[in-house]
Amino acid sequence: MMNITQKIAAKSKLSASQIHLRTLSSKINLKKTLSSDAPPNPQSFVKKRLKPGESDPLNKISGSKPNPLYRPGWKNKAQIISAEDFAARPKVSFEEQFDSMHDGMVVLSWLDENQRQDVYQMYLALMVEQEKEFKTTSHEYVMRVIGEKFNLTPIRVAAIVQNCHDEEQIAKEGGYVNEKMAKYVDAKVKEHINNAYMAYGEVNPNEYVETPVGAADISGVESGDFVRVEDLYNVDELTKQAVLREQGEAQLLIDEKVYLEDVDDGKVVSKANAECMKLVEKANEEFKEIKDTLSRSQTGNPSEDIEFALPDNGAIEDEDGNTTETTRRQRWKYVSQMINVRQQKKIGKKSRRGAKLKYRQQKDNTLVEEDGELKIATVEEVAQTSWKPVRNEDEFTYKGVKAAWLDRQLKGEKMGWGRVPDSLKAKPEEEVVADEGADEANEEAVEGDEDVVSQETSEGEGDDEKK
Image (spheres, rainbow, N blue to C red):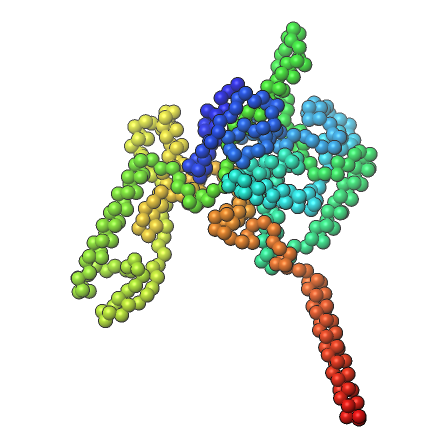
């Protein structure tokens, strides 16, 4: 068995925001078998060992590495034809359509509001539990755990969580989410799906399911591959061994994966070599000397002084000695990328070392200059440049809710993440009108009681006068 601990750093492809904060506090116990439920991942918050699902069938075309957690394994009540039989079906037929949804590998399903809220509630519970127990959270890991629980892809879980988060924030800002309309749509769509299954006499799964591999141009079978096997071999046994081997390799890929932890990219410095560090130090020293020279050049004679737009303290003193408080105008922020052209020419762009050097320099050595101070760019600033790294699809999907979570943890912001109390949510117009009507009725009732009391009082006073 391969040594997983040695391959983690090489295969994880962590960004600079995760490398400096991550320490592998423990090592993977290689004595544990693949059938163990205990995760060998060295990260403390990984408590559930994820199982291999289905890899992206188009990864060979895109050139990406296989991802066993791309799609969950097929676990559904729907009775459809297998992907292998669907791929091996006759290409010529007398009919223009399939006889049933079973033959067409079609599954009708709908993600209703109840399941959507269950996904969001589980997300909130897992995030709070991770923070409370481990002081470290990972949206990437939580999305995959929820996806395996509800048999959903991580990207769909991310979209659900982000959508629910947006709805909560809309309700907090005074907007209104029409829940009655959502219930009506859910009921009508479920009714349509139920009628379709009844028409074909098939079983309605009554749950949401991802599109199975093999349908909708999602092919996991390469029809062009041909392998010749002698009669001396047991094909069934060889197939079984190949399946077990692929499952073992997929499980190892999952076990050695290092998940991205939630950190503030604005406080994480990107990578830079020693030459950039020396350049930053030298430039800041020269800028400091220029400022000192300007401050010492004030002789009292305006014609001889070097004009300095605004001191650091934000105050300007005129000839009469009057001080005016003002603010410094915000300067432009400049960003640049340092490339060692001499080293590139010396190595050569066409050589392997030259290609690696060019690729590395495209990602690193980004400098930012603002208000005369030169510094190494942060990961957040690099992400705004044209040479930014390849965007992570999952991270981009739940970007908003992740930023709200970091604001809650690092800045102490309240009501920006999670559920918003019902007292702060906007109410529909009919409920507002009903509440106003009830308040008016209560006021009229109170006024009526006051009139009765005053009338009784006046009658009592009249009786006293008669007596």
